[in-house]
Amino acid sequence: PCVVLSRAEGGPVRAALGPLCGDRLRFAAGAGYKMLCVILGLADAYVLSEGSTFAWDACAPHAILRALGGGTVALAAALRARRVGDTGPPPELVYNRPAEEETG
Image (cartoon, rainbow, N blue to C red; front, side, top):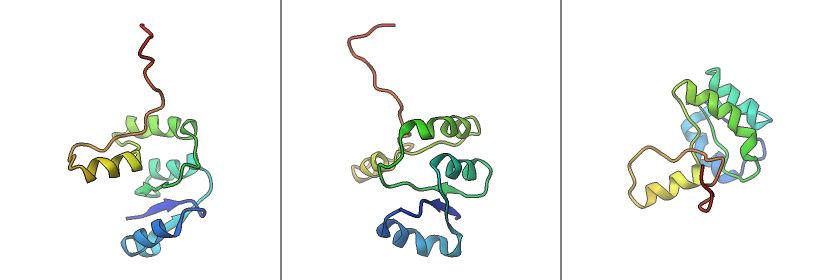
């Protein structure tokens, strides 16, 4: 697979993806641009393991990916789910939290 990362991505992620991707491990700037690479088919995935990207940087490209049948997985939540044996679809990014006391 071709995976796009930030140049600031940590060594453990690079080390884990290196054997899987070989020379198809790519680096680019900007979360939106990296997601656009996935949308356009230039990359199979964009991996971000750090909390350095704000959710609003991902929401528009995420909407496009969903419209195309894809999605944006919340990596930490997906790893937690797999550790406890959840085999369902991986959790996607969420951009809001329900306000329990609100109606409407």
